[in-house]
Image (tube, rainbow over the protein chains, first blue to last red):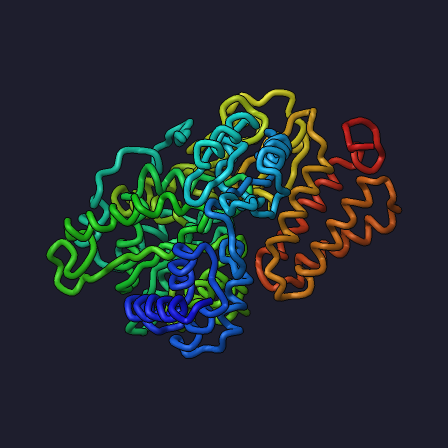
Length: 157
Length: 400
């Protein structure tokens, strides 16, 4: 990371800490905000957040590693989450996963070379009456068929 | 995306004017409100079924300056989606219920813990909160009542099922890993930031809004003796009309199956992955705290489904979602999943499977929080109720 990028990141985190407070209870919200912009929480950001909240950097890493939606490694621009839980599985999750894997040329859990898509499985998205379902970033798509899922990906691409 | 409200009932999906419950409670004393909730015999709608009035009384009686009302919208149980529908369609009932809680318990702050998967609801909820502040339904001196201050903020979760457990939820709010705490102390005395805290389900707050208006006795007349009122059921799986249904407690599983258009039903999973799986001979049982208890998740399986792969899906879920803090849950779920894989391959001994069931019962006793205490339910009930299909290979498709 360039020095200038580091300085920018520090300034951004200082602004977030000023806004949300320097209490430990602000940690998850600050992590969300950093991730919203960078799509993951870089090591340097973790150190800076720790410094400003006066906790050990390992505490920050430990929290990131606990939650499925927080990342300490870079992800694609669009995070596709396929629901893998029971009713979506009953209604054709596997076929959709296969179609997505083939179309993007990656396996579930990987990121495309152009960094446009990361595909993951997610546990129950709460769309059981409308499965199969997937979420792309903060949008949810339901009643999927393999074809419909691919069309949605192509529109976003 | 449309929210399928398939059946409206007398309470949760019925007419309600925003602010109505708040206008009513400011004319009542705290004791009166608590009395009405006690009269109603309302129990927590998340699934555990703890009496709401007891929880609220304990927080109301605590002498702390700072108290919190938390709305548990971390609806992660497989097969449950009623809270999503409530928050999208009827946010006024839920948020008014929280304000009623604030008034009753003397709390000034409410927090909605919204699961990360529901981030798309965040904007509309935030807009609604802004509107409530404008109308003085939130903020300082609510509706002109000197000293009645209450405000709500929303906290977004980050994809952890275990955070639906109230102490793990509080840990998460405090900026920690969502690992359950030892209880006691309970959140009612030592909750968020060490202060008395009431954590209630989304649906519980919606029910409270109606109870304070129409009275506890009105509510108690519905349902059964031990399970009063009505309940939202999230129904999915093999049926013609999946969706959210408001039904009185005590309805039989058979009646539900007919209502939703389920045919050739082999099994019904009540209570989500952490609930129990029932075979045909249990379909005459009723949905109620005293019989088959549930937070509202009903998943229907027809004759074509392979119950062993259903069980595998559940166990994979628990292996992933166990927080790893306590050994019975962290190791136990992995062992149960391995058992399912042995069954799948046909490489098992009956005595080992029986030992795994014993392990499940140990997990129910020894796990620290509700996750590990309830994750063996599916394992035990599916192996007991679908023995023929899984262990004795007398029909059904079990992959062999």
